[in-house]
Image (cartoon, rainbow, N blue to C red; front, side, top):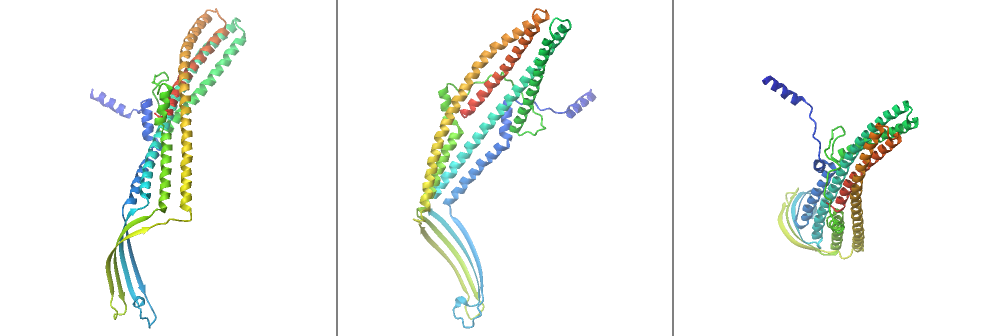
Length: 426
């Protein structure tokens, strides 16, 4: 018994492992955690956080250290000034400067850095929403292509059965050869549609791999259905519009752009305001003369000073820079209005598309039941020789058309939900 258990364990360990099919939620989780573009935008948020710490530096003191060495050689024999006699000197100084008032430029810089981090945060959120939209779209594209391939394969099987019936009738001269040729044409068309569906499936699978950061040779299998029900993102239209105006990252980003431009204008205006700082310094100075008749010089002293500087006029440069920045603020405000209008139009469009998809699905559900029943009756009648092959072919074409229409309608409903959810900023 132990031998059999050992063999079973070895077989399980050596057997190839196959990844379980991914659900839509699992695909989204992997995309948000592994997509390199999302990681890049996450780093941008951290980068902006470091920018806030950098902006705080404008309020803290600055420490500077200086050291200098000087060797002087004077060939003049009649030199009497001790500053120009042969000598070696060195000095070391330490200076601490504390800004007291910088025309509010430091405050404006700190506010700008904080707005920049908020902007990066909304930018990351926008990219995450776009990624989720693309993942969900590719996911349902795969399901649609898979369903189309299955339907066309079923249509091919039904047409091959009709071809066998047509061949038998033609041999018995019960039907003209034209009917056989018509079936052959439709069979060829169904095979072409199957090839197209398989190609669409491969393309959709490749796109989903890209969003999930999977290598091209890695297997990917998904678990889902076009028929799965999902709640609409919002209803009625007024609620959708309000959600969009409150949640869309693009609108928040536009608002932050305006605030950043205003802070830039304050920084420019601060250039003409007084700058006040308190400086404290310590200096160690030593001088050694080559001539021993002159005593060496050694100084060690401290200093504290208050500095006030102001540049009220700089050739009009600051004035025009401030006016330029104010115009930039007005330009961004107009773009903000345009962005709000674009968001409103997008939400209305997506909402109408969702309502249309719901209505189409109701109609398609009734049509497919009727088409299947019609084909069943036509098939039985053809077996009994009660209807012509042309009627059977027409029933098959109607059934294939209705089945494909149902797949497209369910796919359109899912895509409409995705687009509306994205447009309202969920």
